[in-house]
Amino acid sequence: MKVHLASLGCKLNQSEMESLQAQLEAAGWELSPAHEADVIVLNTCAVTAEAARKSRQALRRLRAEAPGAHLVATGCYAELWPQEVEAAARPDSVVGNRDKARLADLLHAQFPGVAATVRKRRAAPAWPRTRAFVKIQDGCDNACAYCVVHIARGPSRSLPADGVVAQVREAAEAGRKEVVLTGVNIGAYGLDTGGPDLGDLIGRILAETAVPRIRLSSVEPWSFREEWLALWADPRLCPHFHLPLQSGSDAVLRRMNRPCSAGDFLRLVETIRHSLPDAAITTDIIVGFPGETEADHRATLALAERAGFARAHVFPFSPRPGTPAASMSDAVPRDEVLRRAAELRALGARLAAVYAQRFVGRTMDVLWEQSPRGGIWTGLTVNYLRVRAQGDGLGNRILPARLVGMERGGIVGVVVSSFR
Ligand code: SF4
Image (tube, rainbow, N blue to C red; front, side, top):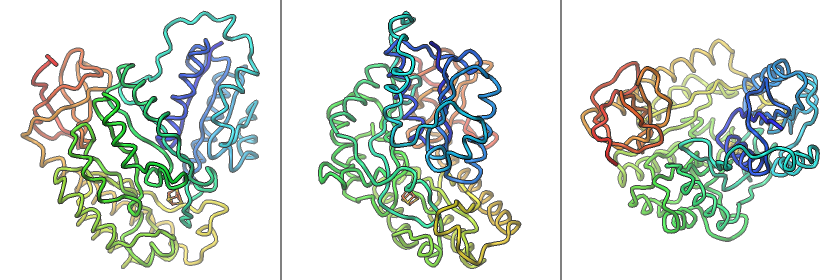
């Protein structure tokens, strides 16, 4: 049996599909392009109206590419709006988030002959890329006014530390050079169990595995504990902090029900910069939340400038049904939302260039990960700078490059050694 796995949205969705892939391949399933697949699984996303639209579009496209395949829709959009999923592409099954971890078992039950009839073509590669996304936590106990994710995924649940460490070790043994710890709210790790917190977990991974790089996905600013910064003394831990800001205005943050003020956010940025001056600090910002004034918008621009973000993802506000924000008055006119988003994106691009420019002239390790096109490879430094360079056989290797200049918003490098 051939299976095609696809994922939209966050790194958590991606990590769940990687884990499903490992389970299915171990049981004899073969990965295939959609048009050849017997079974297709799409992990959908509902975080914005645009993400929901893309989920519907992807379902329709997959249905058209493989009309005879068994189509499974799972993920947040399938959990929250199964009728819309049904209407979009009539999938054969809709599997909510609660049953997602059992997807491999459900497929084995539905297609029981796979292991017996299909010869495994290759040893199950647990991880398909240079980077492995390892899920450490699911759900969230916060209730940000615009967010459907905590509704779709339920309360915060931490995965057992032993299992996480074992998964990281397995990824490293399979040759992956970087592990990204993912979840909905990873800073809440351990709060539900009273067990080890995120800092303890990182400490164990550093001590008990040989993975060359560990990166954190998004961490909510209020959950980050300053004492964890000591862990970054180990250069295997990437100095890259993705801290969602959402707004630089306290009034908007209060209406968003975010338990963090603009001042708290800036203090955290300054604390990180004090111990790790070269760290990349990246963020998410929502523009045009109901009631956002021009002064609020200016406050966000000013905070972004002071924080010196290395990258900012800007999302025009889109009301998600079932959230408090969807019924708030004082909607910002759409053209004004788009104008503010464009202004913030332009600032984000300028700040990213300023941050990247600081490193031109230095030699930095790069994990080369993308297939060469005309001999050009791209890869990431520990602080999330994307570097392009000419090379040969660089894939999934960490090799230093001299960063020689900027071109089309990216950094151009020269690989300085291939003996490592
Ligand atoms: S912290 Fe807020 S935005 Fe993030 S998942 Fe929880 S409720 Fe949603």
